[in-house]
Every structure is written in C-alpha cells, then in structure tokens.
Length: 478
Image 1 (tube, rainbow, N blue to C red):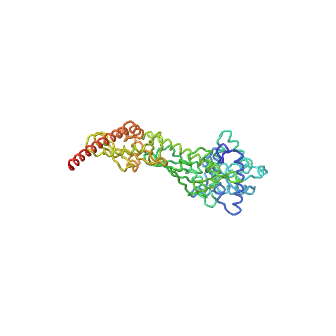
Image 2: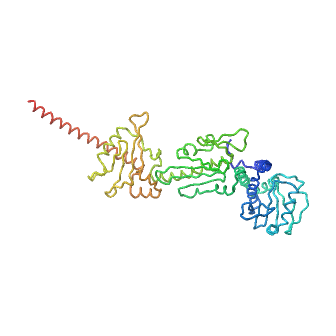
C-alpha cells in the first residue's frame, strides 16, 4: 500500500470528512475572532460552486472599490449572488434579505440571491415560506439555501457527468489547508501560479506544478551543463522555503519508481490519516499525503524531460552507451603499458609539428591527459578538440580508466545542442564513439608500432654507439 495519496483515493466520503473538519476549524477560529478563514472560504467555495453549477462567481473581497452588503460572491453575467456565512439561523437569513432589499445597487444587479452555510444546518430551516425580494424575485428557503450536507449531494450529482469532480473539489478544499488564517493572501492566485506548466517549452528553464507544489529546473541543453532543480510549496507554514537539488542527488535519490521513492522519502505519522513527513536530504517537512504524491509526480515528469534532452545530447556526442562521470565519459579500461606508449607516440606527434603527418594532432597536457586537435584542410581548430584522460583504478595497479570529453571551451560556453551538433558534424569526427573505434582500430596499433620501431632504432643507435666507444677504447689502450 502506498503512503502518499493519489487521485484514485479521492472519493465522496473523503470530501465529506474534509468539509466536516473545515466546519469545525471555522467554528474554533470564529470563537477567537480569527475571521480571515471566512474570507478565504468565500474565495475557495466560490471556485467549488463554479464547478458544480457552471457559473462564474467572483469574491467581492478581491475587487477594488466594491462593497456589496449582504453579498460575498457574485456572477455579474448570470446575475447570481451568494452570501457565505457560518451562522446557520433564520435570523441570519432574515438579516441578509433585509440588507439586500435596502440596497438598490445590489438587487439591481442580482436576480437570484443564495446563502451558503459553511456547516450543516437544521433541516427545519428549509421548511420556512418563501420571501419576496425587492428585485421582483423570491427567496426560497428550500432552493436558495445550501449547507455542507446539500453541497455533498450536489457533488455526488455532478459526479454522474464529471468523473473527475471529486479530485477537482479536493484540490479546491486543499487550498484551505494550505492558506493560513493569519497570513492571508489570495490562495487561488497562488495556486494558479503553482499550476504553471512549461514542461513543453524547450527553453532552458522547465517549470511544472499541481497547485500545491511547484518544481523548477534547469535541464542541460548543451555540453558541460548539469541538471539542477528547486522545489517550493503553497502551504503557508513553509511558503518561501525552497529546497534545491543538484544533478547527482536527483539521479541518485529522486528519479526512482514510486515504491522506492516513498520508502526513501515518506514517513507516516501515527494516528494521522491525511499527512505524512517527507525527508529531503537533512530536511523533514510535514505535508498532506496528496501533496506528497504530487511531489513524486513532479520528479517523474522532470526525469522524463531530462532523459529526452540527455538522449538527444548523447546521440550528438556519440555517448549513448557510455557511462557519464561528471563531465567525462568512460570509454574503456586500458593497460598502463598501452597508455604509456600512447603518451610517447603523442609527444612525438605534436600538433605544432611542421611535417605533413596525419598523426600530428596531439597536445600532451600532462602524463594523464592528451588533447586531440583535429586538422581541417591543413588547419587546426582548437574549438572542437577532444580530450582523452586516464585515472587509476583502486586495486588494479596496471589498469586505468580511459575517459573522453570535449574541449573546455565547449563546457565554458555551454553550447546549445544545435550548435554542438553542427560543429561536430561539419568540422570534426572526434565524437566519443568514433574516438573509441579510432583508438581500437588505429591509434593503439600505430602507437605500438611506433614505440617498437623507435625503441629498435634507439637500440641500434645505442649498439652502434657502444661499438664506436668500444673500438676507441680498444685503440686507446693498445
């Protein structure tokens, strides 16, 4: 069983439980004169009513220079208004109607007045007679009053035509949990920002969110750049707190299957149904289980996009089947003796040699690093040089790891893939897969032959020198 909460677990019973909990929290807040939550409810439940009845209610509290007594939500086009209140009494209804009738600037814009009670009210309240409004319409206790009990019935009814309505309403309700009563700003506007999806935009910066959490990332689009990401949450308790990830951490701990991901990062809280603790490196954060699932989803989306870009880059670089180690790619394991012969060969074939030799393409930087500088039409081109390096292997004294990388100018410039591809295709053949084949089929053989030939020549010269010295010594001692 998964620890996080995905869409399939959102049902009517869970919504009903959430509404009951919200009603209780509102009651407790109002006892302490903390009424900010009422304002938030106006905005959030306006969203819910819009989904259920396909209208366009707007919270009056968000409108500048608007103050309509008796009305909290209004749909100007359909001339529908709602009063949102926690006071489920006939006296509250009578007062709302009285204030409505006194203000022509309200009833002139509203044909239908409704009252939403943020709780369950006594069923007897619906049995009162209709009341005349000054706009020529009637207020019906049966049809124009909505409490949490009737709201659940409307959600259930809507589910017959909209199979995703439970999830949509749950996401709306989640905004209340994340908003914070004492630090109110437009939770809907913040959710819209966190719903941003630029995952289809192949620019450098990738962003995607689900309303309660937002993941931003830099995905490498050129050689030498590394993946990085930043995660932020809507919840007011951790708002503004961002968690950053480097490429190594993402690949090691966050690009995994759901079971592995949850085992590493999610910790259930005893006697807590809707929340869990999420572990990020050395940070521990309490999240709603549904938000935790969204975090997992976002890393899945980022992994998909990252793999697309990396596969494109690997195809250009010829590194598809090679292991990446930082900026380098592992070509093979090579004998130390073989590498020493290659170094010897490279020193004898420096790229600045004036002789017309196809092997004059090397610049020995250290005894562990060689730069291959291709010659194009007789001219060298430093910009597309490749670098071959070796590193020792623990426990194997005579074996070395052989790596391929591009010239540092590519890394520093972070060339985009189109430029990199054009440079490699038009100017150079020193891609990783080519270098590996070239070394196996040409360079190692050439280095061995040159070393043996040069060594033999040196032996002959040495032997000739010994003979000359010997002859002279013999003549000297006669």
